[in-house]
Image 1 (cartoon, rainbow, N blue to C red):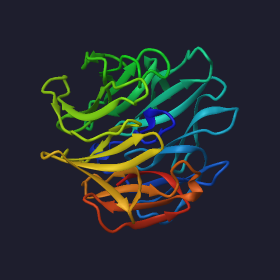
Image 2 (image 1 turned 60 degrees about the horizontal axis):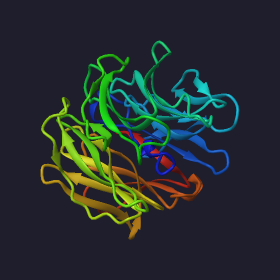
Image 3 (image 1 turned 90 degrees about the vertical axis):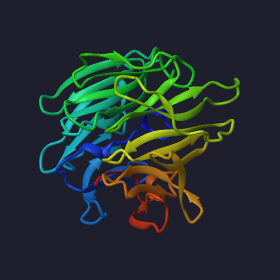
Image 4 (image 1 turned 120 degrees about the vertical axis):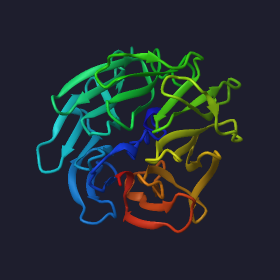
Length: 342
């Protein structure tokens, strides 16, 4: 999950559910010191080098890829377009920028900004209108999960905590707004709700239970309607002291299947949740944990990478697994950080 900082910063991944008439495509990174972003067909074939960058996020249309820039100078965020010039945003001298979510029409892109200055000024959530190049600041402080509604009009849901690095120990709540930042509404008021993902029927999110000073907060997945009503706890997973638990990432198009990541210290696993039962299952390859990259719109397949956790992309392998587990299909070797529009 991209919004948990360096853990999986990973993954706050694109909820592919609402994209219509999208090109089925795959993006990933290769390399070690200077990672490179690639765009390929959804099966990994006909790959094309886009340029430098890390943590790529493909648009639902499959024709644009946002990536975090590497280095010390220049733009902090790049948007590569198929067959056209690259767009550049923000400054590496001021902020680090991570693409968190695309709107279903591929027009708006939500960006998590982390200030490189000690005071944290400049951290927050921004939305780029790729049609007009206008950048709108939606919220300041710590961003704790971001997702767009699966259908138009373009609306955004996000977790926000005041201050820097406050998602783990600050007061964090879930809010909604339009893609241009208007009609802001607070959905939770408990100070422990974060990591929202907007599905076709409800919003999945984490409700955190604070534990001892030496223990991470415990996350359990909940559901609520888009107005904050009808709250329901979905998971009751056993969670050890050094891990947080399941973080929602993306729904299937019908909302019956949810992709999550089980996160914590030195831990990043891929889990799926089936509705309405709420059954949670870990996906593995050869007994090895895998990292989540995306879920197909029909919910049948999950995109993962394995072998590269806490290592460079060159150590990883991009593959797919059935939602319920089973035989893995390898798409790209020596690659990592995959996302999908499929």
